[in-house]
Image: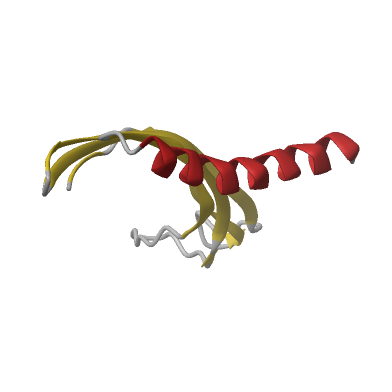
Length: 116
């Protein structure tokens, strides 16, 4: 439990210190870290398939680098690890079969490029 608490404290300290360090430099290049919570669900229908899908909670974590080219134009590139998926406790493929539990988790690496 102690390593986990240490990691959480380090992330909170980084979130507090990185923005103030970027402002103190006053250069057109910025960098930092991002984190958050992903809530996803999958909806689909197929003939002969009945299921109830529930929300799946996942993690979003990554970093970004941005550069201002002009006073009102810049580009920011991000690298984000994102978890998405769904859960089901009563998936039935054919009538009369026993329900199957499904725990579907997909890990993505997303690289958005943003014009600002």
